Length: 424
View 1: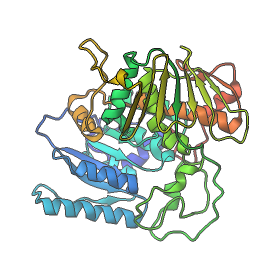
View 2: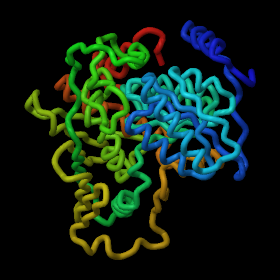
View 3: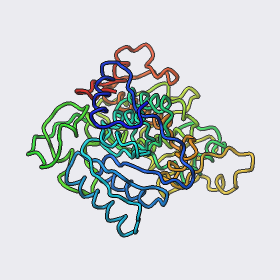
View 4: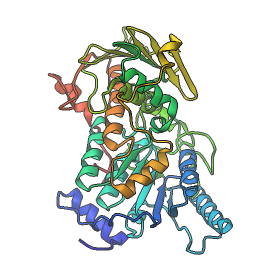
């Protein structure tokens, strides 16, 4: 294994891998001691990327040494933001934060321990898999992937290259969600009968008109594996923006709110049901083919999960109900949550900070609270719901084999065509 891989070698290696030959990259870095500083590269500097960047800058045992974005304005803005942060802090070890247009330049740097991926969803899989191959640990924003097949490929890469991989479904690191799931898992509401998950609709095909290209934006690299189409500022806003862009609403780049918020709320439903390594066995669309709510998921144990109105994630059992959302917890009757769980109760992973948990696990080499396998299983639920809506088909799913049962057509939906060299 080579200790370093420059950009030319990286490009040659990835081209060779696309032809089926093995990809030779540098060996994984040794485990860091508690006093070593973790170095990070941030890939994607939109609104979510900026929030994550600030979170990691605030961690005393880390140093951001690279930012990457296909948009020149955003890239330069965040490079200056990092420089100014360390200047004010008086960090004498800091040597500047280069800005990169191409994520491969970040992955080729041997001094970077981990990458934070906050690009649009259609890019998650390719960049995360390449990062694992390059020996980087990965924090990847939710939803984990654009397709079911991509999610499983990300798990395979993380395991093959022994990477710590945190999925950004950060509600798992909030106390109200852990409390709700612990009570459900310990039988406080009796036998779970139903879960109602309140998130928005699936995505739609992109029909946005062409606009003049934003100066300084590499539009072809923004599209990457997605189908070629003209630029529109709804997809990649002009300049530094503070909103969450609506590429999330278009099928070519995301699964709509079913995956965007679903990767939060369906993730909590999976946690509460103890299904982090499994999933539903049947997915039933609503009777109205135009409906964007009402899909039902049935689990092998008889529990039904519904995409509907609940104000968050509502667990309904034979002895009561628990509703949880950000900053909200309601138990009915209230008494079922008042008595503390005993010493012998099942306790769930307790993380007070999603970003700190990732850094701690980089040092311990343990799996984080929202390991890539969990992210894969949760986003698969979201994708299954979308496939039922889009195709108005009752689907039978084998969560162990991750295949549709007796449905050759549906099994083709597990993957999508990927443009150019960006194939996972």
